[in-house]
Length: 165
Image (cartoon, rainbow, N blue to C red):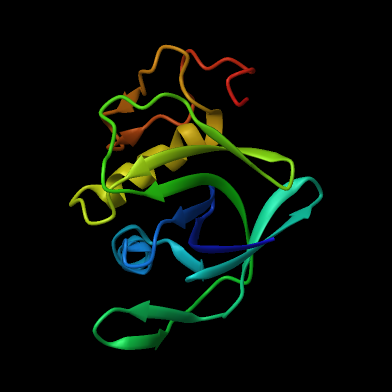
């Protein structure tokens, strides 16, 4: 299954970045790589497939990232990775999002809507992957924050087994 999207990866999983052309997918992928040590899987076109029941992403054009105003840049990349979270880049970001999921090849993934060029987009995605991407949406809507590490706890209280749709 081919998607117009970019995808980055951390050891906790991959994040699929979707949005209309010019919405900032490539720019955000570049910032996630530079500021949060994400690895690029692919930019602009991603191929999704199943491997042992896991949703995996691989690049359609390996190792190239579009940097608007400069052109294509060759960057290190990962040949594939499991996708755990979908970020839709939109013009509006809800203050208190309702849990939302989307199915890809039979696998349900949590989805969030964010602003690509928001100064905290990188932090929001990292936080979302460590919490919602691992455990689903919290039942009470509250993400527990770990003051010591500066990131939300991966072991979230109040997550039920059935909140992953």
